Image (cartoon, rainbow, N blue to C red):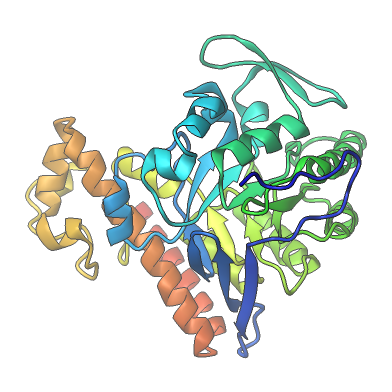
Length: 394
């Protein structure tokens, strides 16, 4: 049975099948919170880290391995899937879940960030973003309406509003124009949004300007949506400036809706974001670092290509229970990486994803036990000490 479509000009927000359940707020002096995100493809425990499957796959691992890692939700990207293989083809194949054989929740980014970071000769107008494909030079116009259409065709549980993501270094005059346009684009996204199983999240921009962040948060959150995101962080500013911006911005988002910090970040970023009330994170860092031979461990970062590991019989992380650490030595992982073996990328990726997902399990437990302030403080202190030691030993 076809899903009912809204009448032209109807700006009412359709009912959502994505619902946030706030379970517990940390009592140790932070804004950290435990929750659950209910979606058509299952429940997600929050705070959560979402592995990035940009073109319909999380690089280096299969859906079966993601299930073993207990990845509860993964991402796809509108820009990349629109260009290749095309949203129409994915729709013909039964939607993105069926196409990639993933039956757990999915979120799709609107494509806005990729237009501004990857596309060539882009031009931003009120209508949308006109650009040339970075793959074949095709001229494409991506509008708020088209972004929603693509995401609905893909069939993600959560879809994102089309926005502009200006660098935090942009001057104030341009930032104000950009935010006003993003708000107008959000209204157009809401009008175009028609499928109940794809729930629309709005995005708050504003760079590092607190007054602009506050004003834009008020505009975006005035639209009653299933969830809200913070965009425009981790785009060149220092970690300290980003953490300060998130600390200010996250509490501006509704308490009874999920809060999503887009494109962030390092383990310290995640732990700190949770401290300020963020529920959802995504980043390519664990998979990209894995492909470049950098492993995240309880003892700090391990650059597995380094010669010091050539005869090291220990696992990458003695405290880790992932398949890679249960089975292989640092010496073997280094051998694979230096030899250019594809297996090196897979094993490294399995470990890094396990590290990030297991970290979030520890985060959720610390919140539930009202000890998150100490957890976050100890984690940051340990990370600083490990990084200092790594720098000294180079």
